[in-house]
Image (cartoon, rainbow, N blue to C red; front, side):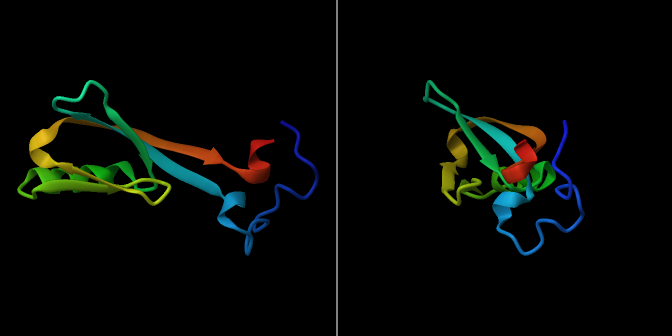
Length: 99
């Protein structure tokens, strides 16, 4: 891929909005009992942190609470969780990085 001169300089996005910078997200799939579809969301957290949050909820909390990349809170009663699948980190570039 050919980029225009100057776009590959370090610090190019410093001081610019987050939309110019590289983002990291993880896909989380949650199977909920008595629902025909699974819940799929993306989070800005690392897979390790998501796994720790799920483990803590299963260890005695009444609900699993996650926040997706859009800032929405997803709260699921622990008794209703069938499974949780945590994908690896997916690095994506937005802004000029997609050229």
